[in-house]
Image (spheres, rainbow, N blue to C red):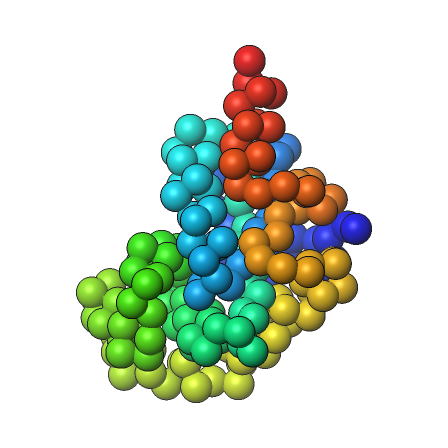
Length: 171
């Protein structure tokens, strides 16, 4: 399966914007497997971030994870204040304690404008962004989280496999 739509300005991107290697993760903030992948992806980015363009797309499995969608909206709301990745990381680092109260605490910790943050979380524009990410995942063949795409193609493996793949290419 290939990635639809391709990576664009609508995506949250970190690493090297001009990298030849583009990794897209479809993730759910409450998914334990995404939580387990998070430190491995951090390691990947700290070692090879200058060679990777890393993209995160929301794929909240709301039926299984009651706070997944709220967390996705919180990260998007933080993104409007230029702190998407900080919120993304903070949610994964506090995943076991995830609930609505935690999301507000994290926003305060990141020194976001809380009034703005609370308004943005309820904004239809952000709901549309999360839904668009989710729909793109469905079209791209995502059947669970995390799902990874490397240069537009579905990657059969987890974060560990990604790290091994990229480490092997370095040697």
